[in-house]
Image (cartoon, rainbow, N blue to C red):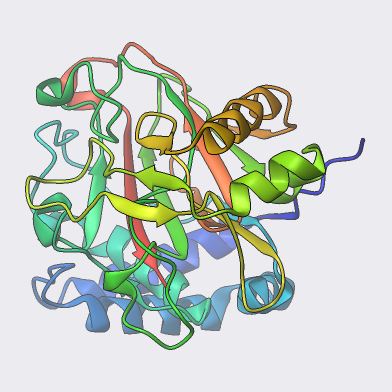
Length: 317
């Protein structure tokens, strides 16, 4: 069976990368810019330079991503900068990453999306450092390394938001990433929900659509996390008629025998679903639809703290 994953991939030429880097570096060097306080300014600087220098086909691919219903998008060989040591505590000086943040937030703007943070995670900061934090050892958190993530969607303990609503109250529609370093070559795997649904028998699919599940908050949420979400379904129809998903194996339970049976069958199908195995490199930007894509990451042994794996994640709607 052919995979239904719709995944657009582009790579910019070195000459374009260098022009972008030079222009953005010059513009952000005029003052200190923080991703939480100055996100609109950073996004404006990045979007302006990206629109000036990116080839037309890449710009078109970015601009139509959400409307075209693609599952994921990857843009490689973006400008980099002199990066500080990996902030394994989870937090660092955001003003040191102005070039990176301008690119990241500029791409979100060109996508036609809005970046946002949530109060119950990451101390309410806009961009999450996905790093191997020793304090998260043994947890299935984005700050962990020694525990495997099974297939999941982010923040499934929140309801799905209606169009035009405040995204902070709902499951994040999109996850975006900028890769700073990944010398461990740890892959991020993504799978289209469509590929899971077509492999379900009808009884299981209907069982997963029933509001007979309880979904708790993931380990990455802070103490004031909202949840669990009760009388929830794993699958739910979106306004466009496509399925959307909320799921985390560690926090999702069926509250009836039928729901538990459907959940077990769902888990079996997930073991066979086709996926894209992505090793994000320095200067890679990726976005995927958190409502229509499941993702996972296997356990790994991180490099020493200063050079450990470091991705930057930002929610977008």
